[in-house]
Length: 373
Image: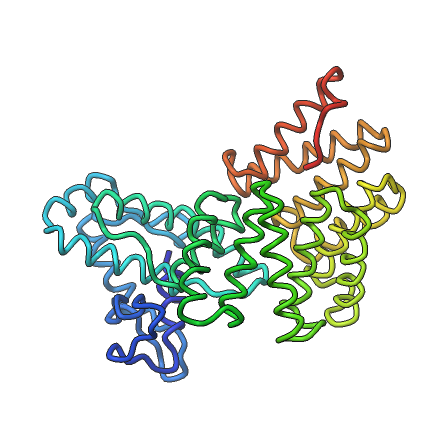
């Protein structure tokens, strides 16, 4: 994707001196700077990149898809190119690809950047597979681990997220210190990974540690602190500690309403989590009221097929199922499964989860044992 090159180029603005490299990362020193041209305002200048692609296309070495947004190289061309490179040259090219991917990732969480990171997932996976085949040393630089961990965690690849998160946390503690914001961010992501894996005691321990540090350093209403509190609340909910979970979630929801507004995606996410606590407490009317609001606002703000919207759709369907509104629940879960398959693919965890639940709900004798999405 050209967008990978554009984002990597813009990450080097305003200046980049290859002689000065941050002690946490060598990624930028491996960038193909001759292809990453910016104008005087720091905006992407695509001329050299597109001219290079045009030359490759003239020899049928690269193909462009009909949308014009992505390029592909035939596997035979890949093999032919690799066979003509020494091991040292292969390592250099792998490092360059790694640098492009790493530097194209930022930690902004609006719809556009989340979608970009979703599209990066197969590219990162392919890089890791190819580099392993070329016997390139595994990742060890901090920003690479942090960036790839974020992509894998957001998109449901928990084993990869855990591996990278553990590396990032170890490096951050050693070089930056235990309470540096970047170290805490890595620890928070690792705690989230543990929670999704069902390793709840480890998730709680790490999450509480991050929350207390952020309260002390950043303040009670800092976005990072509120995120950590919400994550700990989710861990408590998974542990069945519903009263503690409710107390934390209410704090987070009220703070985000006041700071971000009622329709901000982060506020809506917190409201959705609070609705899940109400489900656990058996307060289905309150859960439905919140769930309908969250789903409708997510659909309005983010779009019907956004992963956050799809999750809220599944949560509402589950609430309706508990209320005995089987037909409505099945219809909504079927919609989630269809949109998830079209947007994220058949093998994505959200798609597979929706399909499994739908199968149970459509089989009367198994319906009682179905689990929430």
